[in-house]
Amino acid sequence: MTKRALLIALLVIILAPFASAQAKTPGLIAITNARIIPVVGGEIPKGTIIIKDGVIAAIGADVAVPPGAEVFDATGLRAYPGMIDGYSSLGLVEVSGVAATVDSRETGRVNPQARALEAVRYDSMHIPIARSNGITAAVVAPSGGLISGVSCLLRLDGWTNRAMAVKAAAAMHIELPGLRGARGGFGGMGRGGAQVRADGPTLLAELKELFNAARAYEKRRDAAAKNRLLALPEYNQTYECLLPLLKGEMPAMISVHSERDIRAAIAFVRDEKLKAVFYGVEQGFKAADEISKAGIPVVLGSLYDLPPVWEDGYDALFRNPGLLAKAGVKIAFSSSSASAAKDLPYHAAKAAAFGLDKTEALKAVTINTAEIFGVERTLGSLEKGKAANIVLADNDILELRTNIKRVYIDGREADLSNRYTELLEKFKRR
Image 1: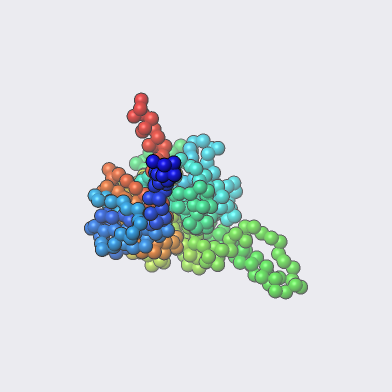
Image 2: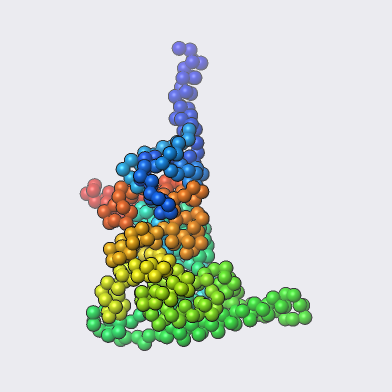
């Protein structure tokens, strides 16, 4: 063999892997033979999903695999849309008992200028843990005070907090007081040093005055902009940050818990003409018809908590979602956590065991959450044209024993390794 022929042969060997890689169209993936649960529309017993440039390009039982696509055979697996956590502290809380790792609240009572996105740790260890259990997006919310600040909706993959943002401003958070046990706690157990419960309607009256002042500030500012003879009001950051809420550009997410406060909050939302979402709503079943009539969706708090009022029954929190849904309230589930964000599907499963229709339970961790936060055109279901946020599981995604095999976020296969898998491998080698 001549030197020229030898050189050509070596080049062919070296460049062969690159040539085969180029044969596959970049960003073109075919998931075949999957049992597809699109959430919106009927189940497809055996179908194909085509992903192109991060979007679902085609989905169905008779979809042809395009030339050059990277094919994954999902025989024996179910395809679900990625789940969405309706309220979490992912990226804001690392170790709740270590103050230096907690950045979920600002000092003071009224902080509409606070932005959760600015404080999110994109490298939080809890994000890959949640992602590995099929959660692909989450609302990350601030807490504390009367007005806590503005939450963000994040995709759970990305190099920076801003790259992860689906919505940098998801909702303005207002917190009304939580419930106290009617006889000192659940099960009759007393609590030493009991605090006096703040009054929800009184706080709403305070908010009404604040909102009226912000509207008056806007009128003065706009009038001065049109007429130079009028003096501009002194810049007020609080009022400026409240204006998107008052103009309906952003919903108010009101943490409200007792039956009395729920009814007061419904009247407040109606009078102030706000777009609103209720969060928590532990006694929502007592005012379900009123919530439904007002058209206010509900993001439920953690079902891991004990019922705050023992007269409601030990299973009050578990029955609550089903009763709300039966009344026509749009519900979504939340982990209300960072370390337990991975358990989002099990909140839906608990509610399903206590009367919530299982189809509705799945919607309450997918499409319902997307609709509540205005991202239903891109997230929440498996449909053509939506973001390819896809979870492949070996069984029902709401079941504890189900294993998540693959997760795609915007068409990219996500890394499922995390602190748990790291420890597992460590102790396997022991």
